Length: 370
Image 1 (cartoon, rainbow, N blue to C red):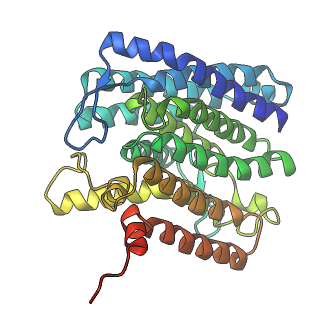
Image 2 (cartoon, rainbow, N blue to C red):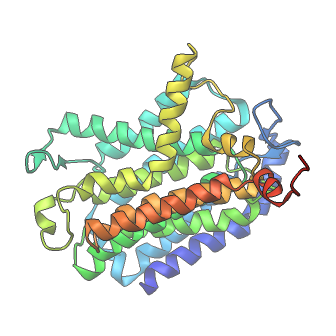
C-alpha cells in the first residue's frame, strides 16, 4: 500500500505544482475556452490543464518503474509501453482540439487510433464471462477493446461541464476500482492486477492534484486534453484487469466472479455513461448529431433545479460514489447487504437533490392568511 500511496502523492504533487506553468503556457498559446451560450463560466478560461495532469502521470509512472514491488510489471510486459503510446496520442489530439477545434469525425478517428494502438500492443479484452468463459479472437478482441476505451473517453468528455466535475467523478471512480484491484493484487496475489492498481492510484492522484485549480471558480480547465486522457486511463485500467481476468480464476475470492468483470466497469463509469446515453437519445429525437452541444446534461438539470455550481458538483460526486462503491462492495459482502446500502443511499441522494434553496425557502416561509 505504501508504494501505491507514494505514487499517488507523486502524481498529485507534480500535477498541482506544474499547473500554474501550464496555465501561463495556455494563455500565451491562446488555448482558451471562450464563453458560449451553453457554458456556465462568464469569462474565458485557459485550457490545457490536461498537460499538467500528463506531467503528473509521467513522473509517477517513472517512479513506479523503479520501485521493487512494481518493477517486474515494467520488465516482463509490453503493457506499460502500450499505455504510454495511447497516452501520447490522445494528449496531442486533445491539445490540438483545445487550441484550434476539431470536427467530431476527426476527433473520433484520433481516439480510435489511440485506443487501437494500445489494443494492438496488448491492452485487450481477451475473454468475456458468457456461457462460462468466451475467448475472443484477436480481431474481435481489438475491436471491442477500442470501442470500450472510446466509450469511456467520450463518457468522461461529455460530463466535463462544470468546474471540478469530471476530475472529481473520475477520482471517485478510480478510488473505487483501486479497492477491488488492490484486493486482487495484494491480498490474493494476482500479479496481473498490479498494473491496474497502479493506474487507478495514479489516476486518483492526477485528478486530486488538478482539482484545487479547477474547483469553482476555476482558474484553468482540463480541456479535451485532460478529459480524454483520464477517460483513456480509466478505460485502460479496467481492461488491464477485468478484460484479462479469467472468472474461473477468482472462484472463492469474490461472491460473483462471473459477473464482476461486467458489473464493475459499468458501476465505475455509470454516471458519465448514463449522461452519454441520455444525451445521444435526446439529440437523436431532436434530429441532431450526437455531438451537438446542448444544456440538457445531468449537471445542467441540477442547476435548473436551483442548485449552485458547487452543490450540483457535490451531488454528482455523491451519485458516482454510491454506484461505484456499491459495485465494488459485491466483492466483499452479500447482495442483500449491498442492495440495502444502495437503496438507503439512493433515498438519501434523492432527498438531497430535491432539497434546493427554493424548497428550503418554501419550507421556511410563513403561512399566508386565508
